[in-house]
Image (cartoon, rainbow, N blue to C red; front, side, top):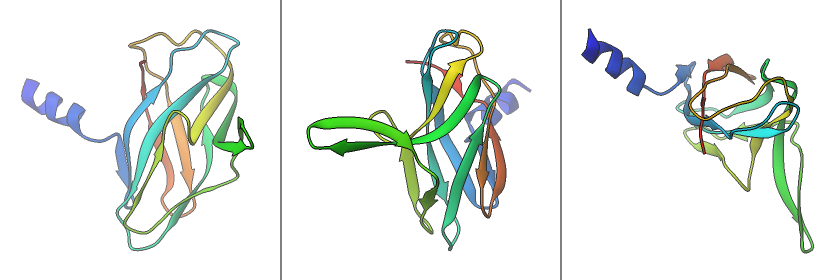
Length: 134
């Protein structure tokens, strides 16, 4: 039984309709503050798919963000969609795309987890439970 549980825990978060979510994690954050979720999307299909929304009860507002550079300044802005090409991957990482949790409903401490649902045009809803870590 122990080996079975360990094997299940080693699997990626979810693969649904050819979309795999891998290495998902959330930065620690304090109640009423903002933090971010990072992960990798792997598209195992022969056609592109589009991430168009993320939802979670961890924060009052959840947005997919992109980081941009304008002159010497860096900034963040909501990204309406993220297209993941056929048979390719896309990383949400610090300094790049991320899911922004705005006005956290509670403290997110290292070692805890939270539920997030990602919405894809073709793969549909994919639920993940990333761990809070640094």
